[in-house]
Image 1 (cartoon, one colour):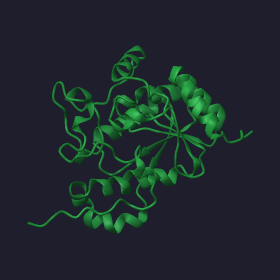
Image 2: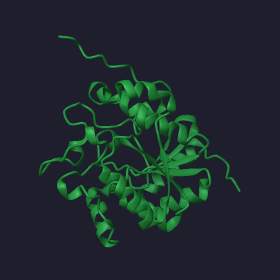
Image 3: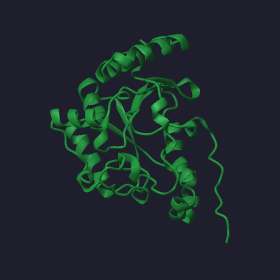
Image 4: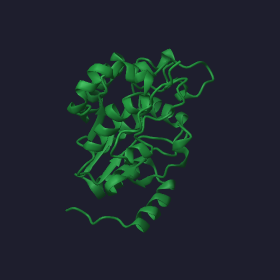
Length: 248
């Protein structure tokens, strides 16, 4: 039976209460409260392991969205297949809307460098916006220690259309992730030991140096730290303003 929607006050109280809860407790609550109108998302990298493992033990039938941008490292795609078999989870691949294909065929490679925000909107944000339509909640694996923007996130956040975003790992650190993976003997991403600690699309990801922040290799030198899934961009229907480079 579908449970009635939560009020704003109930969401705020639960979010505060969940600050002292374990990720497993939060996921169990979300499954009981929202299933079958619930899904999770994952970028399928080493940092994704705890969330995927927990889903496999709590509800392996829960849809896990994977954004297939067309720019992933082949190691990520192999790893995705490996984890699907290892965890026996239910993965749903998401792709850019077909209406963008003529534009991407013509401008796709240049877009990565000239307007990465628009590129992310087309390949990540809009496909996720479409995928969550009809859902009541979305489970994300973000953590507060990852970016400045995520420091201010809450465990429960109301998104566009009343969608509730659930962030069960928000209070974890990268050390917590390493310890969990070690404890459960989980397989790391093939590129992890080569210095790729946060892995996105191949054109926008480089290995980091010793002592650098884990996400220092994402959009390096472009003044960008987020793809848009976890920012205000996700709440917008239209693409971000087009960036036109100044001519010399």
